[in-house]
Image 1 (cartoon, rainbow, N blue to C red):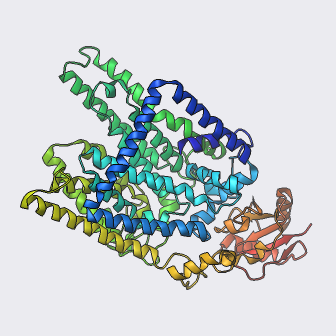
Image 2 (cartoon, rainbow, N blue to C red):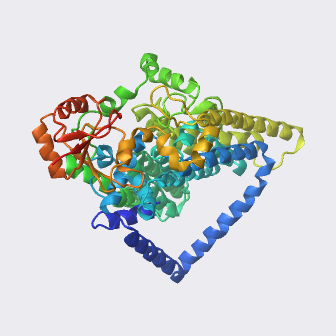
Image 3 (spheres, one colour):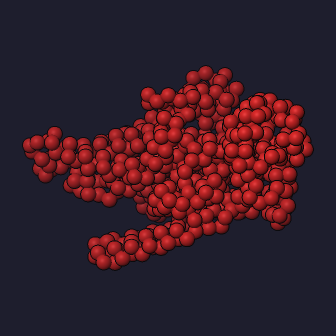
Length: 622
């Protein structure tokens, strides 16, 4: 993923290289260079072969998972749920709100321009990091459609699965228990609902988990102290991905660096006790090692994700615009701009954070379940199995005097959740379910022991307890996944919507050409679809939130932005300067509503062609 993002930035930012031929040539040349380097260096070739053989061994060992029936059943349920989600992504029009607003609109404008740059008609794409969107743009460049952009979310979901397995096994869990826990993460409603969408919250959580996985994989020996372990660089790459996806992962970087420093201190102390560490000049030695660690953990982010923050800084004078933070002035704080309008009344009335968490976690999964997860988004699997497992795992680790999971994973993830502007909001705390999965796997292994097969009456009794807990996770996960699936969050109308059942959605898939007349909001833009290809449509800076249908799934039309004003002469001049042939206004928006009243008084220059559609389309005469 890092390589694809980096290639697109290297070619798509300085020159107009976001086109099929330059991207394909860059990918082929890079792959050829990598193969040549590996094959000409014996150490790299040996490592490559070791990786391949190790992967094949791991796959073969997974055949023993049938001995854990809960793992098998949950695996089948998860495969079915994700198969359905992937089918929806492939055969149903995108309907997620933020994707229609900016996640897909920004990449559409890049592809139309052939260059990654500013996207004035998609404000949030112009200020947010866009790493996942760059991945989605790869598919759009070669297919010239945004239908397949959702594929960019799948590698991040898989990364969450592997990070959970890796962390659990690092702390002593058996493979079948680690995989069971990772499947429990995939079954979380907030994770499942974002599959086959353009939302980035899963990516933010899973890259953070991968960074912790790699930094905690460092052993307490000379390699760690000298900074030669390649795990260190992988942790840095995971952080680079995370900060490319979401700015909140800058806090994750701070937490991972702190854990890394702790790892370095522990390894140095262990070496000194063994008589291998430095006997003099400890401070100088530590400073040198910290420099190596800092380079490994931070430089990948500087190379990969800094572009987004520098771009925003240059354009808006604040790398975190529009938010006021870290001494930079914006339009307001995250609390002011995001949370005030998105906090449910139940949460506002709950009081403190513990009460808010309890209200969110105990709320049943809503049906249909929205992509914009709020209450109940972590599901019953978290409430009844994974969260209690955190407490049980805490006891196990304390009894074992095993501090790395507590100080290196539990503490920083708790800090990340506490620092979140909305810890009750499932999409902001997805990483907690990975923590719960890791602690669950270790707890189950503590119950059963590390032997694959139980022996004796006590062994079979412990095995039965672990299996019962596994079935509890499978049962609660099945309940949450079904409520997330039936009915689907696709409807024909916005007001008093009828959400399609699974069977009705299958009928939609069979008649893909008619979907734009049957799926909201696409079915409210019929007059837009009748405009000629290549038409230029203007919106105001206070324009409609739903913007993707104005461009079209195949990017048939272009979108530009003008300043909102009800001075018709100024507006008409701005429209002519922008090259717009049409003006799109949303009367439900207060500012656009005022402009709509004004342009209706001048039909000679603004001719209404969309009737009473929710978004009014005017042909700009002259």
